[in-house]
Image (cartoon, rainbow, N blue to C red; front, side, top):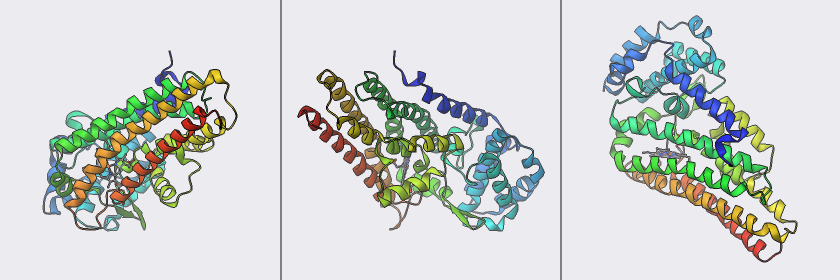
Length: 374
Ligand code: HEM
């Protein structure tokens, strides 16, 4: 039977997941105790930076460049996860990173080892974050635990959606496996919808905006500014890319996409290179229907197109409530406030519009097929 998880495209995602799980188990800097006993969050949430500065000199200060140099790649990812939590806590106090040259140097060396950006990402904060008492958290609140789990859970299911869409990217639209693969891919997206609905229910705008968001400000490391962990770094960007984004030259889209793709781990960035070497799903469909279809293929193709429209609807079932969560937060912030990725809600409205645009294009394809003309 056709299943996304038995497709070869899934293997690399699955390996990425195993890698993240391995990272979550590691504690190369021996920081576990500070997260488990609450010391770190006590310092991070204090009104006074003093205790955190003490932590920086007593604990981070003794981490040597030599010890970082000797780490293997997976351990380096775990070390980066933990040191980036510290860097974010420092940034929350409004102290620029260059005041901590040792920390900057450690982060840059880790980035070299991991081939990733020298800042916190949704992978470090979500998928590579240990579960249970070892969880790395700024506030040690139930709300933050739920927030972290929304990212890690969402990411798990996104992998399967991506593998499914990657498989159909070069598939013939009259292949009977096409629609089942798309339907299954859409089902995995349901996890994202569930996650955002839970966030909307359990995390108030007041809590998020005033207690959590301050830990997600951008930081400047050796003159370069990096955004903090955030949803825009989730590979939902790759879904848009696969569906319609490859040939798209709209400046808003290309700028947003390129900005966020650079925060992805190497395995995802390699996937993106392969994906971008082929036509998008939309382009491929348009090319395929530009030739007359044999009448026997029409019902299967109609099913294919319908399944993609349903997937777009499922994506909107995440993006719609997510927009309302973001708007509710922005309403209580100062005018001009942005998300952790540096964007205001207009980017979310834009992406919803583009997803609906994709669906409209599919409707036109349906019309062309039913009229029997390309
Ligand atoms: C209080 C909670 C949240 C707020 C206020 C919020 C706000 C935002 C904002 C303003 C953006 C635009 C990019 C940026 O500047 O960061 C964004 C993007 C995004 N966020 Fe969230 N977010 C929240 C929770 C979540 C959760 C829990 C998830 C995942 C389960 C998520 C997934 C995404 C995704 C995938 C994007 C990229 C845009 C898209 O593909 O539609 N967000 N978010």
